[in-house]
Image (cartoon, rainbow, N blue to C red; front, side, top):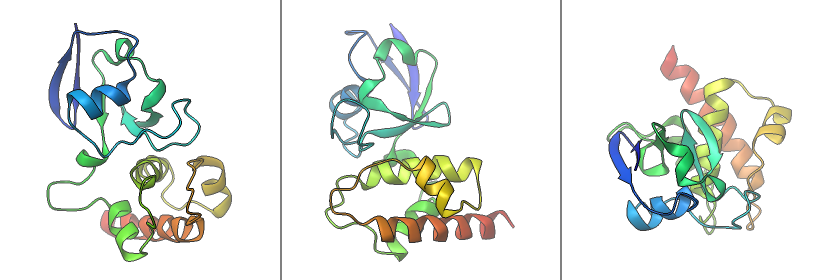
Amino acid sequence: MVQFTVNGKTMNYDGDPDMPLLWYLREDADLKGTKFGCGIAQCGACTVHLNGQAFRSCVVPMASVEGAEIVTIEGLADGENLHPVQEAWIEEDVPQCGYCQAGQIMATADLLSRNDNPSDDDINTNITNICRCGTYYRIRKAIHRAAEIQRDRNG
């Protein structure tokens, strides 16, 4: 049996140890915000935080999450208070179809936890998620706005 937390809630899993975390989140935990895109960790639609770092959950086997703390898009906000990245995404009207946006947001939250004022080069290097709609201009603008909101909140 594998025990871990998802969005602060203790979970147990006693199934196929090779099953990807993505499918546990979507099917067993009923957290549909984490999306399936490619299944080979290339697109980033399935990005979650695993022990505080962004990971592509489609390639994380359940056997490897023992004792882990997992945060999905559903757990990113602090109650009614949106995460700075979520707030910026709304302000900048980022999503077009929206399919990849949860993964984009999770990857950005991870970047901003390590770098509170990323340059365009930092964004290019660290945000490798793919957006079929091509909203990259708005994504970049929202990342800069999220960094500003986060710096303002942190004083």
